[in-house]
Image 1 (cartoon, rainbow, N blue to C red):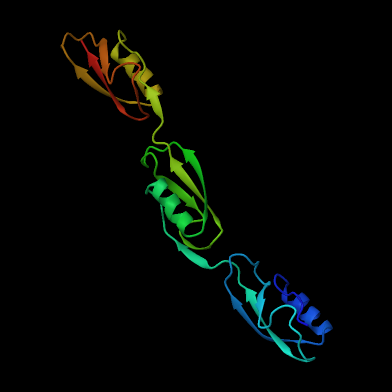
Image 2 (image 1 turned 45 degrees about the vertical axis):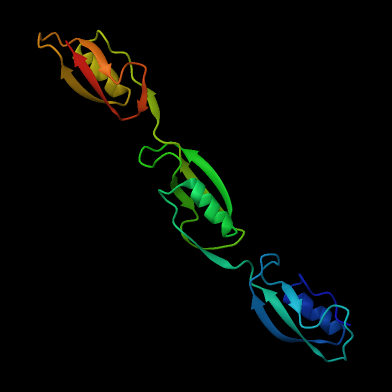
Length: 193
């Protein structure tokens, strides 16, 4: 009688057949999402079937999950990437990070990179939270040099707008205004009077 072979590795399956005076016939391979690589998926004769001694039983071994080609999702929507990757049978995890170059909600990078992977593999997407937002410091009443120093230290570019040329170089306001949250590295216009 043919023993249970599914899930066994080839040496164990061979040993179990030999004990019952049966032989291993042709061994072929196929992709299988459920059976581990190198293990028996099925045999040519059903388990429990009585056979004459010396009869060969063909075995089908698993090559593991089928490979799939994963696209490059960099700079594309993480929502679209997640849906497409899950449709390919991949598991998706996401991490978030601020990034001024990649739009909020888009993929900064993916691990593993685009290419061949196997169904069931995990893909990690690093998703942009957009740029770091910082509040514009209040520099009203400061002289230009001190205002420029404060704004530069806070991570902003500075542009000067002289409203009246009295030469006092005192700040009467900024654009965007003090306290407004803008992306780090933005230009703040200092209005002087």
